[in-house]
Amino acid sequence: MKSRDEIVRDCWEYFLGSGAPYVGAPTDPTLVDRYPVPAPLRRLWQTLGLGFSHEGLIQFCDPADFAFVLDHVFGEDADFWPTESLVFAFTAFGRLRVWNRRWGSVSIDLTSARVSPFFAEEPPTDFDAELNLASQLATLGPSTCDHRDSRDKPLFERAAKKLGALEFGEVYGFFPARLLGGCDLKHLRRVKAAEHFSILAQLTPFTLVNASKLPVREIRLLG
Picture 1 (cartoon, rainbow, N blue to C red):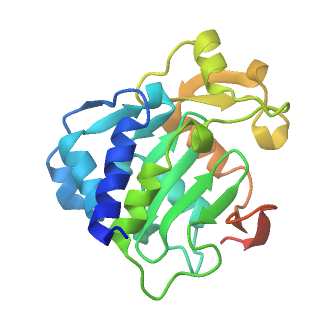
Picture 2: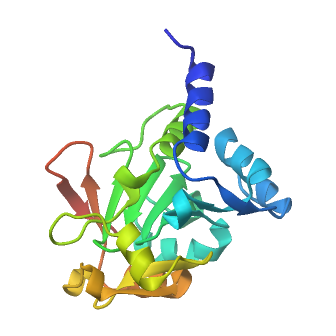
Picture 3: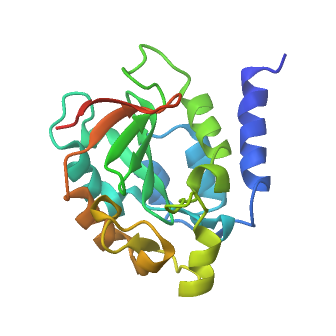
């Protein structure tokens, strides 16, 4: 049986080898000092920098650039304080990967206004933060991060072919928003992530869901 450290190492190595080469730039060295995050994320910032993986399907960002989105999504919810959370990555279609001090890994789908914590219904009394975040990195890839259209077909490659490859800080946004009926290739545009996320985060209250098994179960509204 593998040790905990071996599992963390394997998750990191799988993340590095699971997609197209990571395209990043040196990160401001103060980034690591600004945020108390688990070792796998510090290691990513220090060795790879901020940038793309999987040809732009996933972007690793400075949490400061998207803190305002968490303010809109969580508001003054008693369980999810924005000050305890940071966005460290997002997908090409607006799913945020968040680290929360109490809950660990949290996924926010801005297109469907749903929040999915790794631990589903309540924060754990104790958990291994490094193992939790390492496993989160290992699961990032086309099967978990691509968006599917109304016919259940993946969109990323078709969007890149039609609209061009994303630049850092851009996403493919649905117009009208998915909540308003747009979910196919013809509804996509290349847009700045920060501006688009701000709009989506304010469209409607967000719902906490248990996505640990299908069907996804709604728990309550946040805020």
